[in-house]
Image: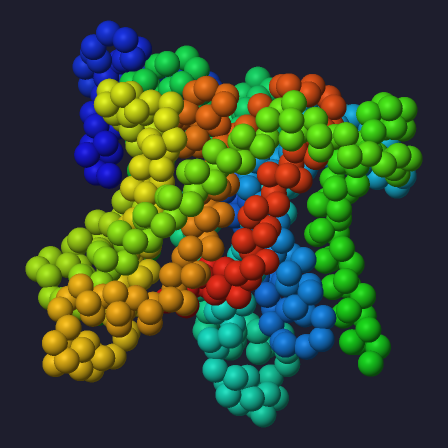
Length: 265
Length: 271
């Protein structure tokens, strides 16, 4: 596991086409990145992805968990409905939504019905919308997952705390704000780590929907790394991109590990 | 009363919106090509046919892709859980030096972004002559999952009461016997949860499959689905049918192990 990772770091310092021997170039790959416009797009898109995909799935997942935390009739069905997409592979998710985005598909029909026909465009083929058209299905799948994590967290909150707050006259909003949210600190940090790591890893859905196109408009660091490695076979440069992804993830991983082992002891 | 009705109406609507895409794709998968061509993908169905499924199953050979998927997924799940449970047993029940460091390294290996390993592993697999084989894919999945499964199972086994092991030792059971006859049966819920989870993870994988496997007839169903797009350009009804076929196994596992599955996802959250 770690030996190949070390190799990856070494390759990041080389220029290598996979056929001849790798040539050592020091930090040349990294200085190339600074002036690489595609890299900058990919970095920017990864940041957008992190904020929109991460932020909205936390908000959506937490909101749904709050709405569905009380056991009552029907709740099981609602939970199952929201959770169903989680079991699909991202490729299945991507294809389902590609069918929608087709010209004259359901999305276009809905837009036309509500009188927004002028906005219709080739959603995945338009550089202005491609990235966002990919985020929507990714969210569709992630919200149910985050919801399950929060539901588990909410279950662990001592009901006596709510009772006490209720007796003290706290409103539903105050109970959420001052009882639930502080109690969920542990879950929050797990969700945060999961989201950041998932965002940096996100590859499948973008690859299946747009391959990072058109004109790199939906390129993420992970897709750019893959196509650099296996389509243009610049293995050294691709390894350097992987190191960037690694460093970004490392901060999160360290936080996660420190937490995991503080509880261990 | 009104509030409760409002709640159910709102939640019912959200739930419906959530599953609507799935239902819609299932509907499309039964529409004939002429119907789609004449009325567009956004219209209600005017036809009903199974020929789309036949095309996906036979012409696109999704049958073989499914077999490949199972040939990879089942051994990978069994192998990684087997190895992880032995490792977790050792780490949890015996005082092995540096065991915290070992666990930490294992967990860290799992959290590593796969991108950093992509090139070295694809090269290594090529070097030892296993490029484009299902065995290589199984090995990658086992290697990748092991750390996390060990970590979770370790947490679970550590919480089992010590007395059980002591009693078994007094009765003359060796470590192997304790593992197979005492610890493993008690760990079943965690194993079931991890089994259901890892099944879907491995089955749904795209990145490693397209990295390690090249030839079409060895592709598991998840990456093969992408190939379907090239094969049936704009025959979205066939693609929809292919998508439904590829989703069935994970949905089946989910329905069968529903409780374990959700519990497994939650393990990380409360731990």
